[in-house]
Amino acid sequence: MPRSERLLNLLQVLRGYRRPVSGQALSEKLGVSIRTLYRDIASLQAQGAMIEGEPGVGYVMKPGFMLPPMMFRSEELDALVLGMRWVADRCDKTLSDGALSTLAKVAAVLPTELRRELEESSLLVGAPLKRPAHKVSQGLLRAAVRAERKLNITYADGSGINSQRVVWPFALVYFD
Image (cartoon, rainbow, N blue to C red; front, side, top):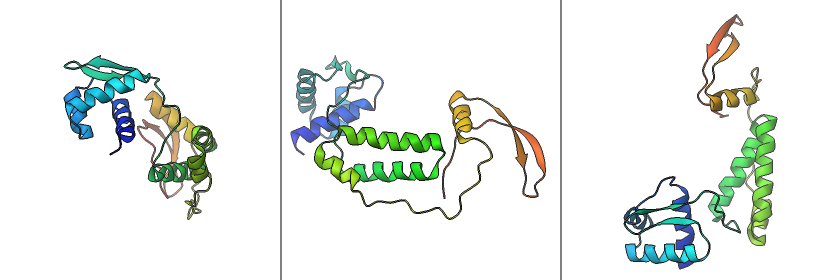
């Protein structure tokens, strides 16, 4: 693996930890020697990466550190485009707008070749078999899930008989 790819992988791994992680755990996860890991961390720190820690204590990357140009493998870019297109096509206006905005933000910081790959992606989302009629605002449901709040709803069973229900949504599942 080229050194530049190894350094990017190290940054990606560090992003996954909120608390300090030992050098030994990092070296095992990356498949490098502890000595190589220490050199890579020192190199990243010298280039401005906000990695705190030291040998024997552990390492953590401070929140907010950004890599200047975004780099994605083709499969990652395909997954991002397909996922955002699916959300834009299948979800309520708020999530749809968020997906399109996300794609635009990613495209704005991609190097030219990757931007072209994103814009010319041939991965498309087909029309759903039947669009469900949403009686409850998906935005309201997402807010209730995030805030861990209960909702009072009117529920209609298969026969069309209404009843009042108190629900405590903990997740939303989207599928065709």
